[in-house]
Image (cartoon, rainbow, N blue to C red; front, top):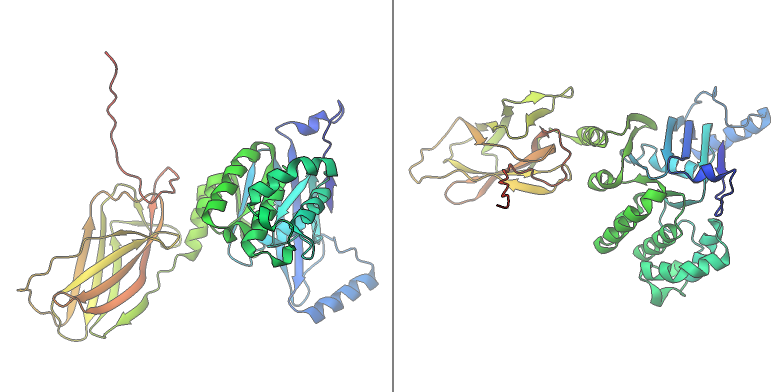
Length: 422
């Protein structure tokens, strides 16, 4: 089911076509893989399959009790210079698909064809022999990729310099930190310049400086490589991917080249409008939250066009008489980072006391948040003493719509004056 066509460093006239820029390096056809939920049952099914002579790669195989599809009917093609992003929640099947592509496990159905050398970073420390030194592991990994010792000798200094672990290069890998393993693994995979590069979430372990260095290298090698990239960081995915698959329970729920639409669907899945009370003194309760003049998508998520007025209505039930409170309302982005704070309401010492209910409408003109999903946190405090009365997270989520994919927090309105030379 998995076919790897080796790379030929000196193409002849007959195979020169294999090195064209439009070459399909990875072709996946109706790929499926099933697992069993407990070991004992899995071993029993394995014995029964051996006894019945089943090969395990049967398209007509049905799920048996306690089995589930980790990957189900996945198909795609990837050419040189293209980057496929795989996104989805934990357990969606992304890592299983990568292991099939790397040849670590066999599929139960479907076909994989890969042309050229394959480099993979799919698990922390995977592919390293822990008792060997970093230098020895470089030679081992290079040999697996099909390089001769002479070719590795020409690249080893670049690999060591890139990994920034020269003083530890002759130390056993089992003594490396997680960050050092990622540095060495990425250095080998990138500097060897494979035809197909597979990267799982391992880059999340590296420090910011090394991650920026990795992306600069990816920008350099991508025109000559087919890249499969898995990450839970959507800004990273949007930065380098031109194709995307959103997976859920092993299936592709969205697939195509509209990366922004897939990311919107990913975030919408995690949008949660349920109130989350962090603190309350019992004096008031938030009973109504409504974004006015908004439309809604198919899931009921409020949507606002970029540049529109933002108006939100908040209704409170009072359990005791209080003075006019002060409202502190924060906007958080899809990565749950605070991006903006609304001005607090002005409090007068002559404000009358309230004993039953309270409704407020907050207005903001010309909303310039960039396209994406946002949520609101609120803190209500006593207007005079600033003593907290209520604190709630994610009181409502909403989506800002725009035709441009912008990953900065704000898309600011601007005008340009062109000055021509006289």
